[in-house]
Length: 335
Ligand SMILES: Nc1ncnc2c1ncn2[C@@H]1O[C@H](COP(=O)(O)OP(=O)(O)OP(=O)(O)O)[C@@H](O)[C@H]1O
Image (cartoon, rainbow, N blue to C red):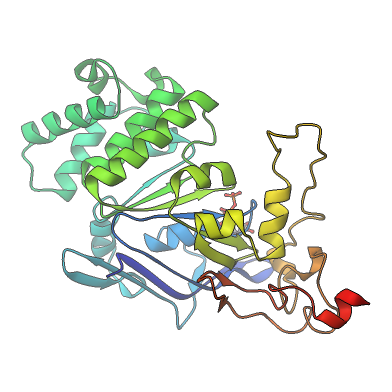
């Protein structure tokens, strides 16, 4: 049974330049205890997809008519996009679903102590007394490796170092025992050692709490360490999905292959990096057919620029949206 099930997700924004499409035809599932990595360049639509799960996109957002986001927690299913009242959405935000961000200051109000914010969130989402909420908050700060948690409880976020603030944000996000944790580039701003500690901490907590995680990053290395499955996003579409092994060891979409070729190789540091050529087009100017064709080395004129490739399953079980995922037709290869 999926914890969260997303189908036909389309997200458009009303802007002065007209209606722009940020996400199209996106679907995925996350089971309890599973980590799904969502990877792609800046502007590919990762954050707006994540925010849709909590209905956190701004007032200019238009969701597709057929789009559904089904959250199943404690034996109850909720159609997130059908929720009308702010009160019902508040139950989900910070309750069944918690989110942590790249910049932890965004999660903490500057003039309220970290402890008071943690307690307030627990009082909203649980039936704990104020004393029990305080005890749990201090326990959680300790659990994420913050030394002297009783003292830290009464401090403000700006008094924490970057790594400690990140840990405090994770402690706050986990204290309500969310079913789904959305982690949006949670380690990007940290130095490599602290990044490794935070990743270890998150994977330990997944095992312990059995929650699902949507882990958003542009860093394939981090995905390889943390995720069970990966979805690769490009210009608002998921172009490839599979297990970490399938997608990273045996990528089938030219975009995924490009992302992997752009990574430095530890075994050959002299090797030239080959970034994906060109820039991601503006969402105001979405290419027809396959959204990647303008940057794709194997795109075929008359086909890729006209026909949108539907995601299809390959024999090894992974899914790819490319007309030529299995290679170009033999006639062209030999030509
Ligand atoms: N409220 C909004 N109004 C108009 N356009 C928006 C709005 N929110 C996001 N967008 C656009 O939607 C597209 C997808 O943005 P999104 O932030 O999801 O990308 P991303 O993949 O998360 O990138 P990054 O890694 O930089 O966060 C971008 O082109 C962005 O400018």
